[in-house]
Amino acid sequence: PVIGLAPGQPMCRILIVDDLADNRAPLRALLNGLNPQSPVLEFREAANGQEAVAIWEAWQPHVIFMDMRMPVLSGEEATRRIKAQIATRPETVRSVIVALTASAFNENRDHFLACGCDEFARKPFVAEELFVILELCAGLQFIRAGELPAQEEPLSADTIATRLVTQPEAWRVTLKEAVDLGD
Image 1 (cartoon, rainbow, N blue to C red):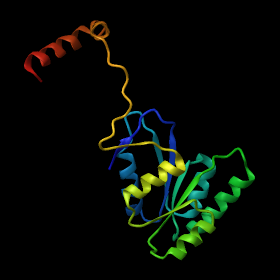
Image 2 (cartoon, rainbow, N blue to C red):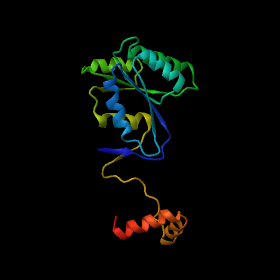
Image 3 (tube, rainbow, N blue to C red):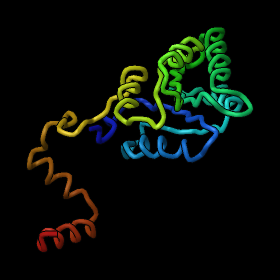
Image 4 (tube, rainbow, N blue to C red):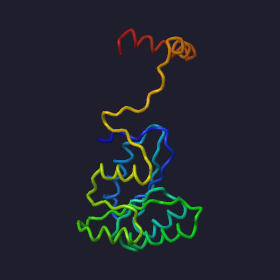
């Protein structure tokens, strides 16, 4: 299973579009829970297709998770509008749009891909399926259990000693007390 995002990747802006906040929250929580200390992912949310188009214009997300059935403007129509703008404006980000739908029928998948979506995922979503989509379509790199990220060369004892000496005295005293206590 995925346990995190590899650090040091370029920022990836993700827009989550669904008319129900209860549907947006789990996806955001799943992805944000993998975000390292120096965040790789940045999020925005929209409650309908019209908001999604406006956010796309202003923010240029790299990935859009788009619910297909929404009031005001459907995900289908929002996808068409965004893809049309991408086609006419080469300077814009080439957003990857992932259709999210509760539909279980494969013909709907083909329909959503034909309207401009780059990928398709069913709701409720399967986390691993979304990770694979993000790896393949957005180039994100995930760390999986059992895999270790690339390690830097271990520090020499002299380098460690030099770094410790440059730390504030109060910090070194606290560290020594913790070491003495085995804490």
